[in-house]
Length: 323
Image (cartoon, rainbow, N blue to C red; front, side):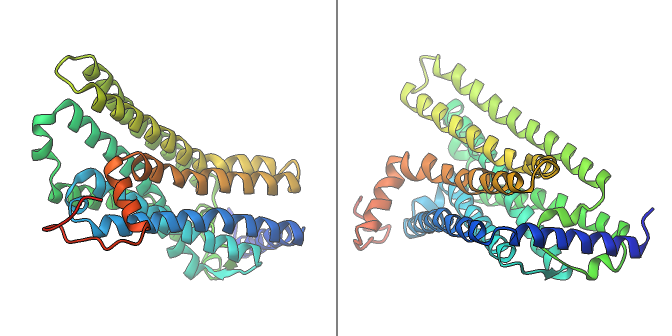
C-alpha cells in the first residue's frame, strides 16, 4: 500500500506530466483553445436564446415536454460553461487546490449525468403521449414534471457523492492538499475505484438504452394501429431516434478517458489529438442535438423562436398573438 509520501510523489509527478502535455506545443494548444471557443459559444448562445423563448411563452412553461427540453438546455449550458472553464485552466497551465476541484468536479459530473436521464424522461413522455393519449394529460402534469426533474438531480448526484466518500477514505491527507488540474480522474486515483466507476457507467447506459428502446418499440407497434395518428407516431419515432443518438454520443464521452489512457502510452502528440477530438465531438457537438430535436424540429417552438429573433414584442398569454 502506498504511503502518504508515495501518494504525494505520485500526484506531483502526475501534475508535472500534465503540465508537460499542456505546454509541449504552445501554438497547437492556442489553436485548440481558439477552436474550442468557436464551437462552445455558439451553442451556448443558441441554448440561452431557446431558454429565453421558453421562459417568455406561458404555454411552454406548463407543458411537460417543453419543461424537460428547457431542463436539458439548462444542463447543457452549465456543462458547456464548466467544461470550457476547465479547458481554459488546463491550456493556461493553471493548477487549482483540491479543495476547489473536488466540489467543482462533483458538480460537473452531476450536471453531465442529468442529460441522459432527462432524455430518457422525454422519451417516456413521448411514449405516454402517443400510446396512452387519453391518460397523457393526467400523467404529464406540471407538478409531476418538476418532481421528475428533482429525482433526476438526486439520482445524478449519487455517484459523485459516493466517489468523494471513497476518495476521502482511501487517500492520504496530503493528496487532498495538493494542486492539480480539475478533471474527474482526480476523484478516482485508485485503479479499482476507476474499474467500479466504469462498470457503473455500463449498467447505467444499458438501463437507459433499454428504456428508450422499449419506448421506441411500443411507438412502432402503436403506429401500426389504425386508432393512432400516423403523423404523430412517425414524428415520435424520429424524435426518439435522435434522443438515442444523443444518448450514445453522451455515453461515449464517458469511455473516452479509458481510450485516452491507452493512447497516451503510445504517443503523447497522438494523445493530444485524440483528447481534443473527443472533447469537441462528444462533449460539445453532442450538446447540439437537443436544440435540433425540439428547438428546430418542433414547429410551435421554432415559430416562437423566430418570433423572438426578429425582435418582436411577445404579448402576454391572455392576449397572445400566435407567432
